[in-house]
Length: 340
Image 1 (cartoon, rainbow, N blue to C red):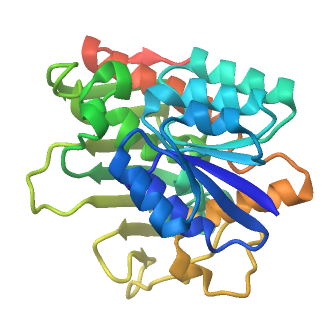
Image 2: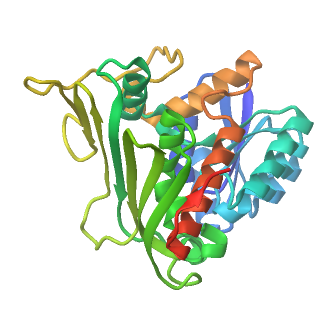
């Protein structure tokens, strides 16, 4: 039995807690949260030990895996603490606030010889897996253009940490990083990024709150992404992409059913979505469980097999942080930034 401790019991962590109940051979035994009401709910709902901090949870011992699902500025210290304690770690995205902090986490994982996986969930999201497979297979020829969008309302978080650029890194780190990571995963590292963004007070308004980024690869392909955390209440969260190939257009809209349509010279059709890149066979209807279940199950399957996760390596997650950090710089200086 793999015993799991969960650091955090906010909205994302509550989702993970529910998903953790679905895995064979996995038991959620402890939850930590700074808010007393959250601790009471966790104890009542799951019958687990509760702690006021992630540090206390980790130091208490008896865990095989620690899930770090807390504000971004706490990812580095809690991950390293858990690794040093001999635990495997699943850390939610974004990995950390800068590449240096990411490298510290990678070094700690190597020293402890433990698995470290970052929750870049689009790598397990069927619509994005489909797009990557379509690009890789060249089924419709070369990719000519890709545009992505991820927009929604303002995030605040515990003690307003999302609105403090020092603790949260701006909406580019919270929301847009999903698309930035997907672009890296699908296309590799661009030569430069050029971001255009609007900013608010970095301590109370979150810094860059709406951005458009151009990713330069070559003169034969154009790639861009829009991210925001500024829509009014009542406007639904929206994630889309449009991929223009030589012989087709593939379009995704999370608010539409079916979500993906392929236009290949005739009536558009909805392709059947694959579950993921790896073998994700299960006795249950995994499509109802969602991509967060896909990534969790992949992580636990890797642990059971004694192998390190490859779909999301900590090194690849660090590359995403480096690129988004370059986007923040570009948005603030209003100049393109070359990637090293």
